[in-house]
Image (cartoon, rainbow, N blue to C red):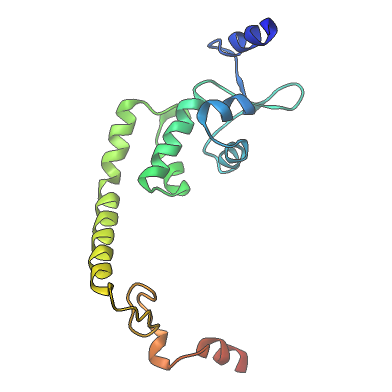
Length: 161
């Protein structure tokens, strides 16, 4: 028991890197997600002499930034672009978050407007029950192929060539 406590204390030292398992537990995210973030260039780690992934302690803040940006609705390429604006790929600060999030306001406004429009359409559909492929704006929004009739028209056209 004492050995475990000593190991936990030594791994929390400021200069000691975190293993992928430690980062996973601390960040509340699967190790596979951390490997994916690393493969996508969102997170950088090093390898120990034994070949194990290691991350600097500030990777916790970087993962928190990634998760918060995902919760806002940003895609991984958008998050990567935002992180690329930071000098030396450092961990985002509160000021960085304020600057970046101000740029995301139009994106959020557009999503809010789209959700409000969806809510209005949904209210109009209550009781309808049609789920028509030709008419239902919720079940089949923006359908342009319905004017050609029902069935797999596009598939049949391509197979005749």
